[in-house]
Length: 140
Image (cartoon, rainbow, N blue to C red; front, side, top):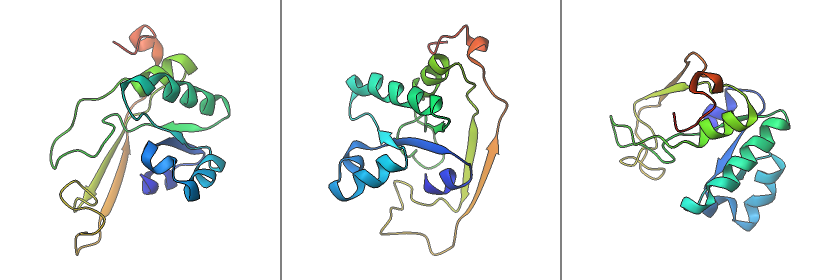
């Protein structure tokens, strides 16, 4: 996440509640305009509202559509948060493909068991998806 945020200007994102609520870290995250992510299915509205608010402040909002790290070579189901934020803020979603070789900080190789080889990360921006492309519906 941090390397992706460092690649673009004025980017913010939702932070896992267990991390966001740490007393020693929260003020730093809030000052950077990060916001608390969803801790459960009933937290989605707060995350969407915070994302829309950050866009109105001039930030780009980075959303990882799976909400967690993927298993090696697979993708989890995508959530609708990015598209709902885009629809409400009337901004495009710009999909970004992230490739990292070798895989780094995956579920198989965590922070305390990193690979010996340094990773190489590539970001590829795909064509934007506009809310009007989907009749302003995140369900579509």
